[in-house]
Length: 272
Image (cartoon, rainbow, N blue to C red):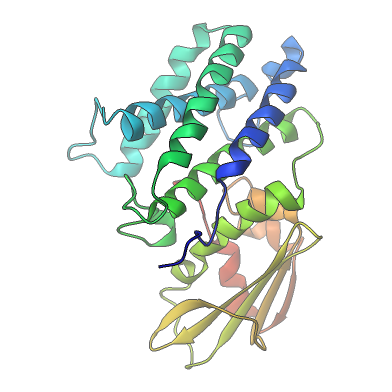
């Protein structure tokens, strides 16, 4: 068994949390209430959702207390409902109290993730990657992407510099790309067909999937039959449903088999 997980983000949570604290501490009253690309949520709502994430991790993963379950309701509907309920309740909370609670809960969350066996069974599977059961390292990486994407949404809304650095962005986008094989699951192609997705700048990289034995798998570098090249800003918005594939298509470069490459524009690496 390998000694280190393929994607190790444990040391990045405190860095990301510190960036969030500095960001939120700098906001004006008007900026707290600006709309974001997270549809119905403004900046304060997105921050409240981040607090909800911390509370859920501590309650469910650390303390093994679930409180609610979806019952017969579809999981996505259940999640959307409880997300909306939380954000509505947080309307009565001041930005100062919200920031205080985010700071209070962030370190225990980071400590909890560090305490988990990366190769143990995760409390929840990463469904958007097509996993019915996930290892902790993948679950923790998914949790990192949640915190990264929502902070980016806030920064985008208030016109503050993003956090698209090699240190913070690459693990985020690398995790998102774990959904590539699942995105192509219904696409038929000849054995050995290769699709390449590239994210530009030093913060990005190249990802390949190959058709092997009637399924798609992440693969090493190879000559691609279809290639999609996308910039980081478009990538984080597209793969979190912040913009549509049609809008993104105007901002990307496609080479080789166009129809095959365009499937990559439909990848969604969030529960949505």
